[in-house]
Image 1: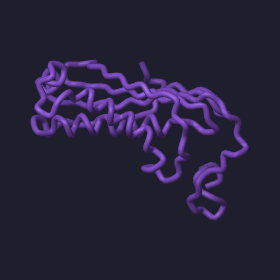
Image 2: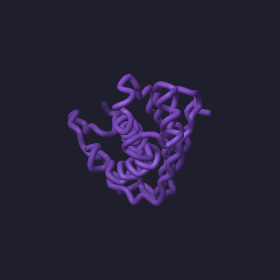
Image 3: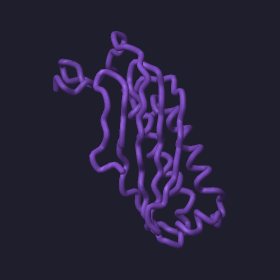
Image 4: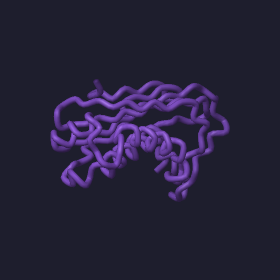
Length: 160
């Protein structure tokens, strides 16, 4: 377990000590993708959902989730998030993509914050439209890119 940073030498979970690390600008982008009925996508795009503006609510939820990541994920450090951007795309008539880009100037990265934002944003979309499309699925949640810190840059090979 030596290469798993969240376990000590006895195999017990612990929070990684980042006190020796340099403060650098760190950015992470995560994506979530939902598949649903084309009519559901159309209603989201036209604003025809009773609960309100699905994308606006999902955007706020994603931002709130980013800010609460260290409260939800036990070994995450609380970070001074400097920006969060949430974007939506409709790559097909039955798909909605949600991307969350998070930035900080800190000693550790914001991958978990971006992934948490994408996850909660996707779950919020589900909650907003489940009454009309219970068969919808969240097909993918993943880190697309990250930069900063000692490990450098990561770009997912299948990213667009």
